[in-house]
Image (cartoon, rainbow, N blue to C red; front, side):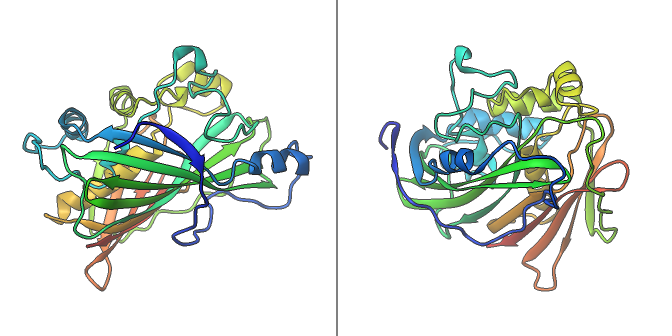
Length: 318
């Protein structure tokens, strides 16, 4: 695999999925006008390629973090679905980090001038017969597929869609679409989208205690410096949330882990998920699942302590 390189390539969509954020008629003037949006959209088509190795240590560490009793990974061990998020990690120098713990705006991602950034969802497809394995040398090509702007009762929103293709020595292994949402800073009196009740027809469930240690360990494993996950003063006093925010990718991983615990030997062909409502560390939450009529499609979702839907997902078995 080659070293890091950057170029221009156009990306497409796997399918269209409604964005999780409300976008009703704006009540405040837009701070991103057409000229500013055009500058951000100049990032569309930009791509970068990163190389990495699927090593065993992160697999052992995530297994421990999820409280699994897995056999020790060795060369050739199949990488569970979504665990590729342990690789291709950003290694920005400390001097490049912004106030929120992310790298300062610009670089590969467009410099969106909105302070709050979150992983809103994604769609993934695994290639049959070519799973990622411990020992693989891998390469990920990422492309900015689109940059869109909306304003509504919840404030300004900018959505960035990034398309990833992951390859090993045997060819294409995984295609992923990653939805990133940028939001304006919280203001007193901001409208709050009405919550959605979580379904009550789960076939299997698991309770999760999102304590500081769990969030710290996942942040460390993914080299994620975003302060909303570990800095209580910052997340409550600067971003205005009531507690530390549980990582969206961690909840998605827990949903797939729930499926693996209840369907032994399950391997995925496709997975899509959408963040509906933030999950905070101030109370336990639950993950749920149920099979569809075809026996291959599973509905998965997260539920907070108040019974509200926090994430919904669909998994299709290979």
